[in-house]
Image (cartoon, rainbow, N blue to C red; front, side, top):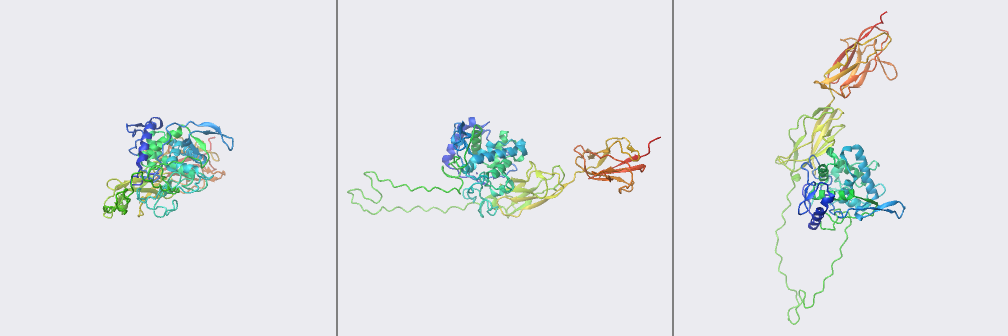
Length: 574
């Protein structure tokens, strides 16, 4: 878990322990990572300069708190044993290497799904396990039912600006039960505004539940694999982890658990996993999840006074002093605390267009213009360091670069945020790109984007062979044409072929050559034709009835390309 706009409070003891442990682990547990004399990471795990480019800014978790416990320095070495209940061979080893059965299954299924849908990402399930460890202690040690849903919600603290980020409610409490402020939810600690678009149905029950470990693990996998990342490349894995929670300490902790799990894990029964005890937001022993009941600590009994000493208000023997307590001097008055300054997000009054160009593109190509907005205060001054979310809305397969329909960008020094480039899909028509300020209930800006059909301006035959046939026969050669647009190949362009009456009358002819439909019936107009990737269109076979003479075939494409082909039907020479 980790802070939307502000940084977290860290326990000094926890931070010191983490620094020492990371120094000891770095040589064996973080590929490409080295440390300086103080155990701080010097290379390999450093945040990428573009770690959050186009990302969520506050990450999947809103930078909520997380567990800072580090794995044992000794690598796990599981050994086979027999289950006391089933007799099935299982592995046993260090307690920290054990992962609850249902949770482990969720991680591995998420890896398998990503291997099929995004093979270039190379997501290892151990990375999901590492994040699940630091976010929720593997769903509180695997306290989940058979479907993978936690027995009680796992909630992070209120992101009310009191030591954490300030994120006003975005879901009316639907996910986190809090109608005032957002809270990170579930085993992978998604904030509601991120889950709304990133959520997945990992167990096939038709629901996207952040408290279900199958759903949450699959959503986390897709979140990490955004922007065409290849997680087998260390710098890209670092960027993905930092995008999940933008903290170098968080990155170090996750990488440590990743390497620990890579060296060996074993399955333990649900509900028996080990629980972390150190949190990034408090002293050692605190939990980052306030929904976990706190254990009360008994009061410490008073220590008896040592011989020869006297308590306050008690005279020394033989002193003859008064038994009344010694009056305490009045406590010095302290000035009232200064009010907390507003965050940049709180000062935003509205969004203003920042010279966005005309959003038009041909199907399958990139838009020339990008959506750009400016976050402004009431005085119309630009506000920096504000997260602006761009969302694609409507029936379209267009996406931002990287294949995502949502992108969040932090405003620069002038208050301007520019969305990633839009790429048109194959669906034509209009859709909307909406810009909103994350963490504020403000009116957004809507932009209409248009995808036009692919076009061709020229059609030519690929052969100059004369097309002839005898009455009642079939043409030996099939008509094949090639489409181009401004000299370039025009692939996937829609076309129509019609046998017309004359050059001046483009209506369908009722005699002469014809095509056949799927049932073998005569047809003289073909629709829903499309050129292939090379711009080539090959028409079906042509047949002739008893009429003789010269007939015309006309081919039209989207964009205005037209080609007229002569067809001759004559009796065979005697």
